[in-house]
Amino acid sequence: MTDVAGEFEAHGRFERTAGDRETFAPTANDWDATATVRDGVVDVVVVVPTLDAATNDEVADVVEDGWYDTFERRVDGADSVTLADDVDVTSVSREAGDITVELTMDPRSGKAADDALALVNYVEGTWFQGVVPGYDYVEKVQAMREQAAQNAQSTDGTPL
Image (cartoon, rainbow, N blue to C red; front, side, top):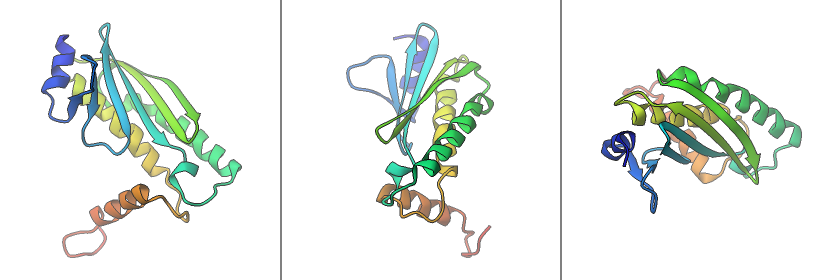
């Protein structure tokens, strides 16, 4: 196990994936994600649903394509959420209802897991910001929306 892998192992918000000593999954995110330590870099992969896969409605192709293009452009700013060196969005691809975002970074000493988590959260947050009002969302997404609405309420029940 490398020192960077040890940082992930000791971090409270990652757990080792089955059968791989160098791959870790965040424990508190909404979608599938992994961070893999290899050759001095960390590869982060986050899989989120397409807009059409997140709804119970049929989404017109033009809306889906425009939504995806916007998501792809916005997620390219991932390097702004961490001080890690050489953060690169290596690919954003769409297939069968999933969007896979692949990133690489040169980890900072002692901060590799924090930086990887920031990238995962950025991709998921960018996805969530793109949720389009007016659709009937699948149960998981609807629960996320309701939680966000609850979080936006102050203790006396009025919007912040």
